Length: 217
Image: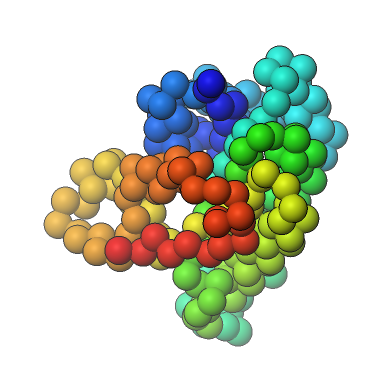
């Protein structure tokens, strides 16, 4: 039986790769992107009521949710710690934390009811080893990880799991075409990310719940 997978941020390169991977596997993919691009549902994930409406719509139309892949991201930084802008923090808080909070709170009951559910975020090594100019970004990623691991604790006695995948940075074909001489040695290709996410269903929920899985080459 095909799974019902909701991909948040499906209009970006990583989102397209993940949605495509699940579609190739025969799953039902519901792409969500604020812009509504690429045939995605246009939902403002900062709006809790809108996210609740999305969860209710998916439940009404499909009866269940077997996976939520949260790929809403962004980056801001500075040259020095003292040069950090708290406006950057406000932006990253909304993108990396608040959207995650709204989505996880509204979709947790659906994942809990799934026979084999997964909730997945992509974090960065910077969360564990921040640089002075990346204070806001690293702090936001660390908070997103903590939130997701709290969800994992809530799911520990269910048939669902919450997982953190860690990368240094992501690369896709358009980036390589634009910079053909750059090696991207420490970057994770979005196609490899998509394969790793899909592979999380190959293991029992308890085997992946609460794990931080490093995908850095």
